[in-house]
Image 1 (cartoon, rainbow, N blue to C red):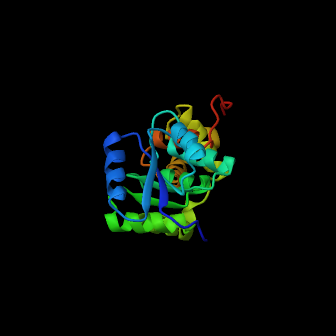
Image 2: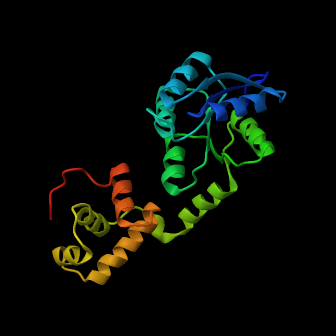
Image 3: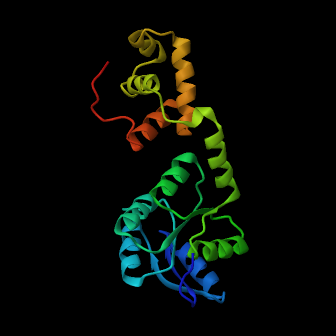
Length: 218
């Protein structure tokens, strides 16, 4: 996809001033780039994107107030022409997938080499998808792994009971299945939600809207 001639106009969104300063300095030393603004949270990034019309927005994910994913979704809703390149330290499914689904053009980790970041911004400015190797591998594995799909109805039922405070034995009794079957369902849930324990599974399920607060007890 073509873009206007001239330097690539960048907006940097990160809640850490040191990170913003470092990125601004790096791009300022490179020909073909112009940092037009900096934002400390998602809401400011959305406002500045409308005001400054950057070509690419480097977007952190975890920021106070409006986070990166929410900001990406809002930019997409507004029809903002800027391409969003996520630059973060997190590469789990619970971070990568929502960002891509919200409309991010690319996803890089903050430990990416300088040359890779420069190349990624240039590619993003032309509408090309850019993924760090670990993120690309994670997405491929998710597509190839049968267990990576949505939770089944039974898995939701198990998770609802866990959220209500039931032990595995109590959940098994309520659902008329064995305790071993409950444990198997939980392992599948952990894998699909990319978490490691019951508490994290419940929290992630609420975060994804898979569980509803105040759902009727079984």
